[in-house]
Image 1 (cartoon, one colour):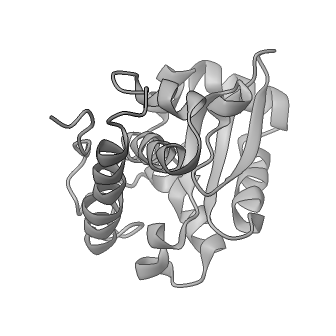
Image 2 (image 1 turned 60 degrees about the horizontal axis):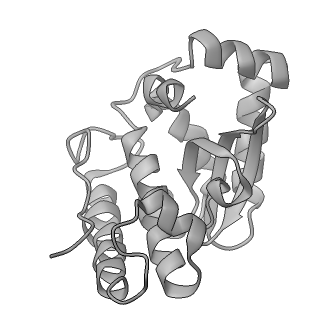
Image 3 (image 1 turned 45 degrees about the vertical axis):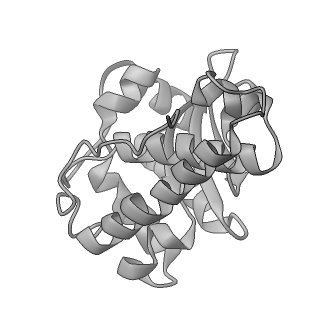
Length: 193
């Protein structure tokens, strides 16, 4: 029996258009993420990590197990915080107040987040996380990296592996990052806070 399964998307495969196409979702979720799930399930037996949550596996593992578990956790968090495109999409409540207090404005936060995503060399993720001191931090994580391994609470991530955007944006990663704000499910991000 497999310990992990491919998550169900909280939206229809074409729901994120025109930001992310159905074709990208089919490849990204149905092929890339499914491969990480299959790989992890094959690597876990005999590892001593069987029965642990994905978060615990990411915190305790290395090598192939870490890479596949990290990619599953990262992709799950990414897909679960996306929704149908909305103009002027922005956080509300406590998260909005924290962003404005720390970054000066939502626009200033967006600019820094996009800049960190655009300048991450190679493949990886850009994250908004909550630090133990209650401050919000933006981090760049290479490959399968997750802020959990640094003691942070991950809130929001944009995938900057080419498979996340190449069908729709080719090599224009900054355009992809800018468009992503229309499809963030801020209510989900706020719940993670």
